[in-house]
Amino acid sequence: MRGVEGRVGGSRALGVGSPRVQRPKSQRGRSRAPGHPARQHGARRGGLCLTDSSVGGSAGYVGAGAAAPLLDNEAEVNATIDAILEGIKGTDSGASVSADKRKVIDGNIEKLIELSARQSSPLDNPGIFANYTVAYTSPGPTQNGAPAGGRFRGKLGRLLFRTEGLYQAILKPNLAKNLVTFWLFGLIPGSIGLTGTFVKLDKSTVKVVFERPRLTILGQTFGFGPKSSVELETPAFYANKIRIGRGSRGSLFVFTVDEKSKRPKILKQMDREPTKSAFVFIGLFLAALCAFLYTLQRQFGSKPLLLAVGLILAAASVLKKGGIVDDSQSEIKEG
Image (cartoon, rainbow, N blue to C red; front, side, top):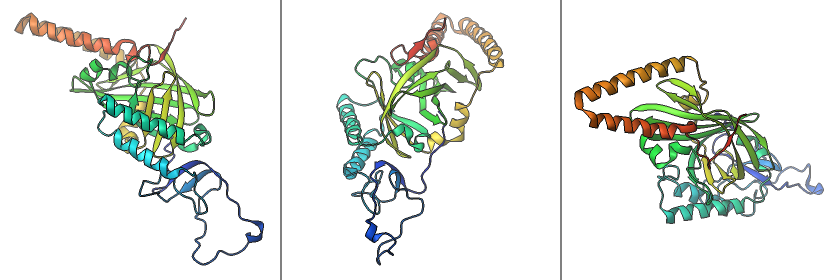
C-alpha cells in the first residue's frame, strides 16, 4: 500500500509515550550552565519525542532524551528490536524458517509487545503513515493459509508465482494498500493488490474493508474476486523503523521501512486501476493460448499438452477468488 512516508530526519527515531519533564520554577529563565547543550530545534516535550542517541550500541530506536529517557526500559526495547530484525533475515518473509527459529522470533515479537505496553496509541502517531515491506509473518494457531498474500504465498503459489516482494502502505486519512509482486512461472512479471479503507476500533486496532483484488499481468490490470475485510492490531510501533501487527486469529507481522517499499515501481503498481481494455487483452491471450496448445499437441503429442494444461489449472487454482484464502481474510458476501 502506498502511504505518506512520515520520515524523521537523519538517524532520528520517534519514541512514543515519553514522560513530560519540567524544570523547577526556581530554575526557569536561568541560562544553562556551561557544558549543557541547548535544546535541539524540533524536539518536542511529551507525546511524540525526537531523539538521536542510541543505547548500548543499538540502533537507538528509543533513544534517551536530553533531560530523561523516553522509557525506563529503552535499552531492552532497542536490543529486542535488533534481535527481531536480525532473526527475520533470510526467512522469505516468514515462509522459509524452521520451527525452532520461528519460536525464537515469535518470542522476541511477543517480548517487544510486552515492553511497548506503555506506548500511547500507535494509531495516533503520524509516523504510522508510511510505505512498508512485510518483512515477516507467522500464522496464528487457528489460521489456514499464509497471513499475507493468501494463496500466492502458499506452497503452490510460491512455486508458480515466485514472490519478488510483499508490501503494505498506509495513506492519510484512512487508506490501506497491500501488494504482492511476483514472477509467473519465473518468467512473467505481475502483481496482486488490495486497496481498502480502515476504521479505528480501539487505540491499537483497525478494521480494513478491501475492494476486489487487482491482478496485473503483462501490463494489464484486472479486478476480480470478492471484497473482504480484516482486523489488525498494532501493539508496538517505532516510526521509520519497525511496526508489529497482530491479526484477529493470532498471526504476527513485522513491517519495516526500507528503500524497496519506496521504489517508484512499487508505488505505481499500488496505484493501478482495472481497465476495460484488459478484458480485450485477456480474450486475445486466451485465443493465443488455445492456438499454442493445439500446436503443441500436433507437434509433440499429448504429454507436453497435459503438462501445459496442468500448469494452467494449477495457476488458476491460486488465482481463485483473487488468491484470498477463507481463513486469511473474511470474504464479504454481496447480495
